[in-house]
Image (cartoon, rainbow, N blue to C red; front, side, top):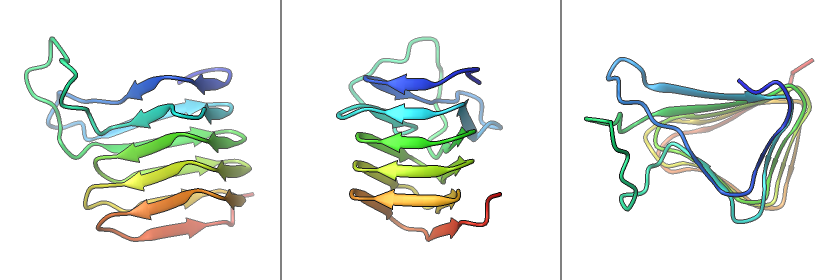
Length: 130
């Protein structure tokens, strides 16, 4: 939970090593994922996450922004991907739910020049946010 804005220019990975915890939440006033940046619950095999005995494979990821989510990079989830914003999603990058889960949007507006994909689930848009 970030009080101000989250501006990501690198790699931000969510993980859980608790079998009972299959949800990850990233919350900020605005979430900005810059070009070539990654926000994901899909863990690269090349990374060594020391101190974790086992990692939850299908971790659902929720991004919550009071205002806007702006993506020019990659936002992906190994489970369900939920994107909630008080205003808009502005996407010129890639948004992907690669697991069996759905890709869910709850926001007022979507401006998309990139890709919005769900590998095995549905894409659901709720634009009745007030």
